[in-house]
Length: 136
Image (cartoon, rainbow, N blue to C red; front, top):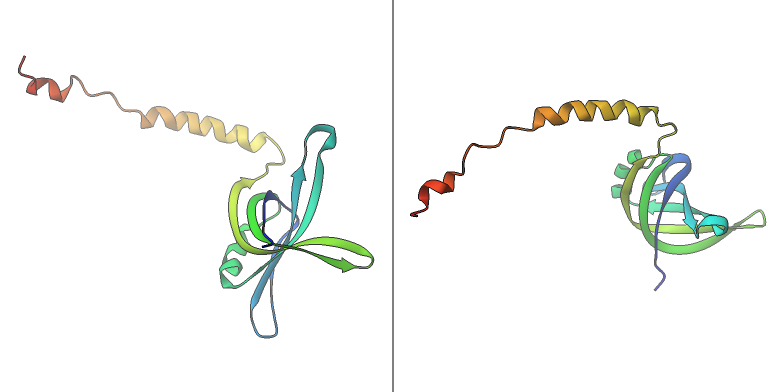
């Protein structure tokens, strides 16, 4: 059985859906998967292809920078003397949001969340309603 599970980020371009001559949708994108850490960290690029209508509908969420979890059949292809890693997708999961290019948007969102939190808190009920039922 040939099965790969990986988590990475969509790179290069957003997912693109094309159609075969028979009208079957094929959604494709490139994904960067990091391996190792520190000085030994490497990025492996995988060309993903997802066949079928369910992936056609998910394509709008597969945009540059989005973190995905993928499962599929690993393969390779040759093009102009280079070998490329391919993955025929069986399942895709949106793992995380789009990576922010600057911290300004995150900082702008934090005060709004802090302002909303006090409004969501309510005063605790006075006394325990079960106290009236205790016979002693």
